[in-house]
Length: 478
Image 1 (tube, rainbow, N blue to C red):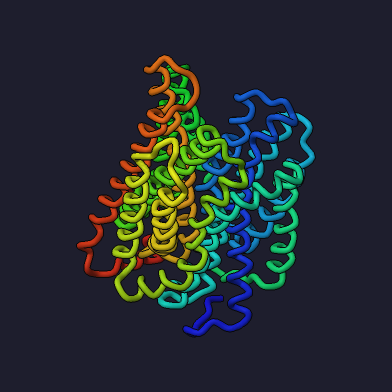
Image 2 (tube, one colour; image 1 turned 120 degrees about the horizontal axis):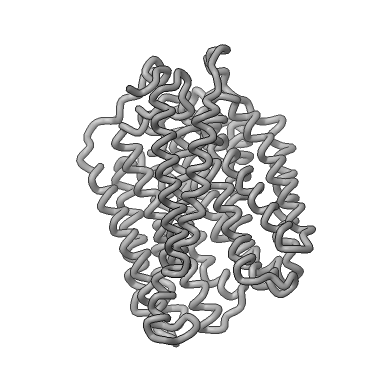
């Protein structure tokens, strides 16, 4: 049940730490694997295609099943979905550590991505349902968002340390953390009893069409990094995804019990939030990917040195739960979010004139601004994701947000890769050069500016978004 008082007691903090632990687990898992890829390739003798597939498999599982995961949390119980898929995450992360061939890693990462797709929106919905709307929920979401963002930045360092002891520890370490979270969650987590009619059916046609559409869309986005190579296939995959999305919309308009109430997409704040989240993650994922290549391939830094260089981004772990809630209460969610995204745009712009012999002092302003950006952006995005949405649809709203973020990460990496490869091809060279890097950096800078413009369109809003009524939530969109 929701905590009714402004002050959080010991049990409330325990619940929050469990939920934060799960989102931290997801972030650190992805970051550690990215650092470990070269060691995995060397040990298992994987081709470049299989190695990129190890990353893409997670994206396919996560992006393809996220909306289903969010709705399943609303219909089947958030606590139940959270615990079940946390267990699946634990098991398949461990299986990845025992992999002796590429196909085993592909399967393990795909199922781990599916588990995260069900676990993440259930976790966010549990935060919103366990903490009262207002300053208490803002504080809880600030801590939650700071932990999520900190998991990724700290994972870069943790991955570098674990790889030195053996790449398999990148898979085994999350198992230990997941087991501890699961044990605590069983006793601490409760779920609100929601009035869901027993006769309500399950929208099987909607599930199949939207899941297939998102799987194809994720695959098409991943293929974009190949540029002109296989462009026909990429366009065919994306076209098939669009057709299936159209079929899904038709199904949802006609079914009595839709998987997704299409009326929720009429909320301007919700659409704006998801577009901003997508572009924000496009910019960060693309920047992080290029900086990693710059430091390791152009500068010859080790994985650990690269992780330490980006560790300062982890200041969001401290600022997000302390500074951000105060700023939101003082200036409003949209203004704080706008400031955070503008900080990101400035960070990327300052990195555009990068040179082969830049000192770390020259890179530090961008890293600090990026840490500030995450501090001011991630929490307000999670707060805005459920703003004005009926509490019975918070799982769905969380699924929409995390779907936008996941596709943003995939699109960011694919876009900067495509631009960099096109530059190298135009120059008739091989390998990443400085000009290709600089051209690639235009992508995150542009994406951040677009995200800021979209967010700025909400600055004129003077009144709070009205809550969607339960009756409206229960009827299909016309």
